[in-house]
Each structure stands twice: as C-alpha cells, then as structure tokens.
Image (cartoon, rainbow, N blue to C red):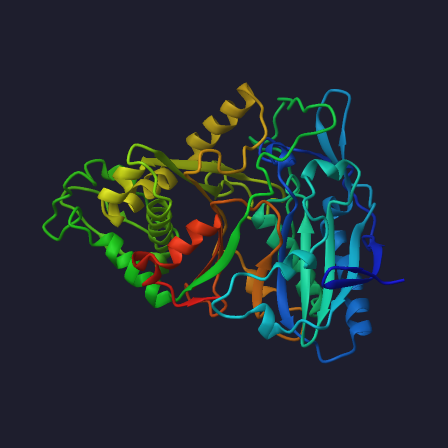
Length: 471
C-alpha cells in the first residue's frame, strides 16, 4: 500500500543490485574518508521535465541503468564493516542500494522554482536517508535513488554515504548513471579504486561506542535561498577584486604582494584576470575567490559581530591534482582537505575586497603537495572526526563546486532544469556552490543562514548588486 509522508507519497521501495558481481573484495576507509563518518549522507538531485514516455517505463529504465552503473561502482552497493583492529572497510558484497518511487503530483516545476522565495521544504522529501549519519552505513545501504513524479516534471534525488565519496566521486557516479540511462554502451570515465597513496594510513580512528554523533544541532531555525550570478556579474566582481589600489598599474604592491609568491597560477584560464607587479610574480584572484570573499564580507557585516571577533571562512579543496605523484582525477573516495582562512570582523570590513580575496587566494595556492602531506601527518598524530558546524557564530563553510558537472545529468530527455539538495549537513553558515544552468562561468550559491542573517544579506547592497536573480 502506498504510504503518505507529508507532501510526498511513497509508491514503492526495492533494492537494486549490481548487474555483475564485484571483483573488489573490500576497500579500507582512508584518512580523508574516516572523518566523514560523523557527517550526514550527501543529498543532491536534479529537477527534470517530464519524460516523453510512461512513468512505468521510466522506472524500469532507471532501475536497469542503476544496476549497470553499480557494476562500475561496486563500492556503493556494499556496506561498512569495522574489523577487530578498528579499521573501517567498505565490504563490496553486492548488497545493493535502495530505489524509491514516489509522487507529489500536486507540485509543479513553477512552484518548486518560484522566484524571490526561500527554497521550498518540499525538496527535503525528495531524498532518502534524511538526517542519517554516514556511520550508519554499517547497517544501511551506502546509496539510494528516489524518483519523485511531479505534476509536470521528475525529480531524481541521489543520496550517498559521505565516508565513501566526496563531491567529485558523487557526481562521477551520478553522471555515469545518467549516461547509461541515455543509452551509452560504454561509460566515458571509469572510477579508480586504487588505494596505494598517502591517504591509505595505518592510523586507527577510535570511535565512541554506538558510533559518532552529529557535530551540529540540526534543529536551529534556518532559511535557505539560492542566489544566481551571471558570468558578467562575476567578471565585474573579479575585476573589482583585481583592481584594488593595493595592486596598481605602476607596479606598486603596497603590501598585498610583498609576498607575491603566495599567488599561484589558476588552472582555468577563462577564470583569470591578471595584475602584474614590478619584480613580482603574476598575481591573480579567481572568480570564485572574488565571489567567496564578497560573501564572507557581507555575511560578517550583517551578523553584527564585534570588531575583535575572529571569523572563519572554510572551504574544501580537491587534493587529487595537488599531490605528487597526482592521484587519478577519477580516484573514487574522499580526497579532500579543509582549508580555514581567518580574519577579525573589523579587519575584514575595514579592508577592501581585494585584501579579503587575497587571504583566500593565499591559502588555496599554498595548499600544495607538502601541505597535503602535512595535513595527513597531523591527522595521523590525532585521528578525529570532521567538526562540521558553526561553533562560534562567526563561521562560513563553503561546500560543493561550480566546476562539478551537475547539468551533465541528462537521462535521455534533456538537461536538468535545476539542481537542488536535501536537508543534509546544513547549518547557519553552510554555503554550497553550483554551476549556473546556462554555464559559461555562471554560479548559483545555495546559502543557508539564520533567518535574521539571511534577511540582512538580502538588504546588503554590496552583495546584492552582483545577484542576477534570487531563485
């Protein structure tokens, strides 16, 4: 019998198994995987137009495609297991993943994407494993797909254990699932399950009896909005960050570039504005650093913090290309480290955007092979879970990435209309960056803040002048 849960009715639930048996027996969780055991499952999904065929045919096609995709990603069809020595492994036992068919036919695409409104709470119900910690993968599936039929669209929600994948691997799997459903006979990118790298550690993470607890309350009042930035508005922001009086055309660096070696070369040439200083290396502040710096400044301002209060902007960086030798870009698992950048509220607001963005740029550029390895050694000296949250009221945590190929999730009848997330891992100050649907360097920021802080941000003209639409 279908059962109603708020606005969504569950039609059916089953287990989908890999099409072929796994040739991998187990994978030990790494230094980058283990801290995520206290984080909730990743929940990201795509909103699509209705397909030009019956829902029953869609469900059958998605189940078959998921089974084929799991054959390429056998770790996701496994379960976690802790051995006698305390090491946590993914046992690739082909136990399968959850597949849920649901409907909410009273909801239309227009209602879900209503402009100038907070993100509707309906999206929370489009995902499995709500508020589930990754440690639960010892007894629960490591992934789930929920397909929700709407009045004039489909939402496909993908939920994956965060101790098994980071964002790069999550979207690799989700893209592959869509690619197979669209008709690909051979997948374009095969995952790399090798574990012969610096993240494979002999250190043991001692976990409390019964498993870890969530590191943030999860019950605080929050608002959530998506702010859209076109390529043009971001270029204006980047131009402002790169044309500070501190970096002028006379070759004078005025302090910001006294240590010009802190600025490295950005990989993506389309995201560069270059300022040169006499006798110094090229300095550049990227689009994303400019946008992040503006957000940091504006949120700090509307939080009304004392000038002496230390603020923190934390972002995750992909370590695959930072290590020497480099990891495969298709390395499956977590290969991320968190970079905190700190400044007092007074300093952040009395200096200009370029100074703030320069702090972010310095930390990102400095996160090279040696820094990654020091981070591993530091964790091994005191193994610990990742402290996700805003513990002093002055923190911002940036997740996801506008470089993730989210809009490549074409299941066969067109690109997504939008990308949305569930309730997982959200707290005051949690920001997620998505590419804009039009591509070309546009960005959507999913901003989660305390209600009064978000109201202040909506009135902060230094920030809002760059916003093209509030979705």
